[in-house]
Length: 253
Image (tube, rainbow, N blue to C red):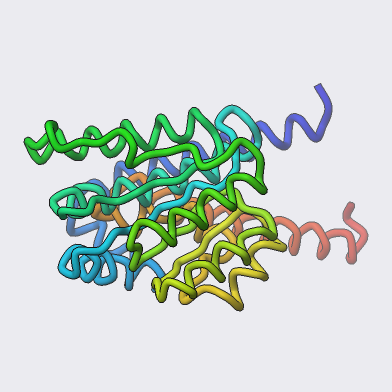
């Protein structure tokens, strides 16, 4: 086993210990309050925008992007599913429940299951419509066209594009602007983030795309713990680099 592999395993083990340790410590509500999170405007505004959509009789559109489950883009789609879970219970009481678009069949099925469970929790399983979670297209271009059509046809007032998107996200954002929809965009693609930054009302940058579980869903302890564990790991890595540079400077290593 190479040194790089050993370092990788060591870092993964350290992160696991930190997440479990902080998560167990933060299970106490009073302790959890001590672990503050920096404000993210997109997450702060989302409950209000979802409520306005419900009261106005309009739809919330959640797009999981063109990523495929089982590939390197899986995490992007799961980030979108987490956001969907956070609004599903409230939004399903509306006459016009959320509509979800995906570029992968498995991701569309995950969206359908998420909505179905939300209806069951509301004791309204008979109102569930599997067409609320749909595969918009099998390729990035066809998916984009399908999602843009959904924005136009479904009376969408809030559009959440959270997942794996390329530069075509700018076209989807433009379609949202045409429908006067409030748009929150988060993607795992750096170039798409740049396009989203200048076209969306709110943009999730960097790791914020994956942080919705800590800010939404009631801020579950282990979601919050993972963010704090990352912060601790960064500090430890920075300290190790600084100490290593200092030891090298004085000739010890």
